[in-house]
Length: 70
Image 1 (cartoon, rainbow, N blue to C red):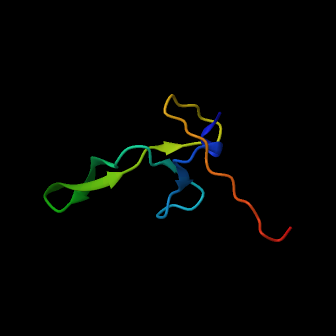
Image 2 (cartoon, rainbow, N blue to C red):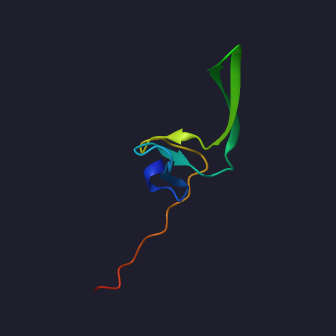
């Protein structure tokens, strides 16, 4: 029972090759960026990054896809 087999597992639409967990809504996070005269804080809504091998107590099996070509 790993993230790769979970219904909440998915690809990050903004970063190819990075996987995310969508079990809960994204969380707001601030990122400090250099700006003229100081720092600018950009607020983003992000889902947690995960790997295929991660484990979680919230795991639920992804639905099986059945082909009609049999």
